[in-house]
Image (cartoon, rainbow, N blue to C red):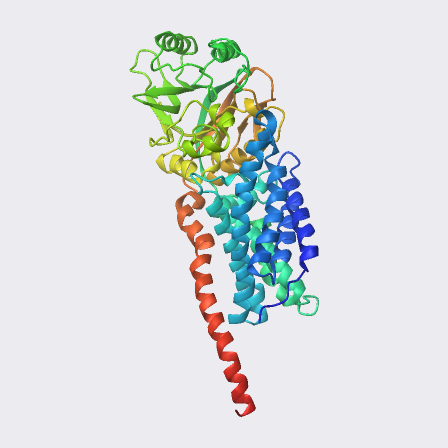
Length: 517
């Protein structure tokens, strides 16, 4: 027989809605990081003892509340339709994933009914189920949307250092384990059996006491990073080359300075220098003036395909010296998968997306005069594979190029900055996060801010950026940890379901034997 729900449905639904809102407060701009545990606890208690359809209902209530708040920045220019569409997809996927968590609560205690299993094995399985749901939502449909992973909520808090050992997914796992272990300890009246608090205490100690994995000092790189604050939004009114001219103007304070690299943001060149000789000549002139390689970005056309491309540029050489095309173009933003289908649903909105960016296959890494530079273009910062590939290829520093102009004045900007900070901690490397319109920051390997430019401000940064070598466990073991701490929940649940069903069938026979039948 299934356990009765911890909360009746009439109460569980508003608790789930409140839990989603509380979780949103843990992320930037508000950034009250401890509320991530409160929000997670509120959704977990609504799932305990639920039927599958009940889990779908409360899971949907939680996810809808969270996503409608968390990604409201989508409405800045595009209105409510994309907002409801993306939040709706994420709600459905998370609601289905809630069933997996509910099954963990249903089946494991039947197979392992002891108290210690309730505070160790059950929280571990619940944490793995939550982590697997994050990984699924972050990879499907198309390239997924791993924007709101629980571990990312800790970017501005003291618990982020564990990500250098376990990655963001591992941080999520330990956070959920701690939350679930506390819930079970309370349900088992821990004040009577204090030892049952030990697993939760161990998880808390991991989060609070494990220091960031150390990487090795490899010197510095003098980087000039320019935020032009040009009219780079999708609907901004502008003359041809207006963004390029704004970047050039903001670069002027760096002329004559000693530089190792000049960095411009995503879309900082609003023409294709590969196919536009006048822009190519202008970049050659800029190289001559600053006497340093340029790391710039533009939409490029090669053959019959268009790419969002970062380029390493140097006059007097065959340019570009190196290319990196955005690995994960944004579905419905930079390309339209299954366009025929979505145009039938929203022809006016889909018609706005004229370019069809092709996913890149070249490495997110440049060798800049012997210094390894890892790359991520805009939303690629949220994809583990891009970050890990750069580190494994030899990155000693990261350059993140982005364009936040379509989200001026929203939380998108600071949420993305939080992800950049988490990547610095996870990899033990500095990050130069440069935007067309801000906020731009240079982030040290420990996540602290070295320098920055406020949003809506034209300016240039000149920073001796620390370099690091050596790989963190998160980078080396990342895929294995994701399987162990996430996807392993699925085969484990299948096994538990089989064993639980056998025990349920065997129970009447045992009762009959005891009665002498």
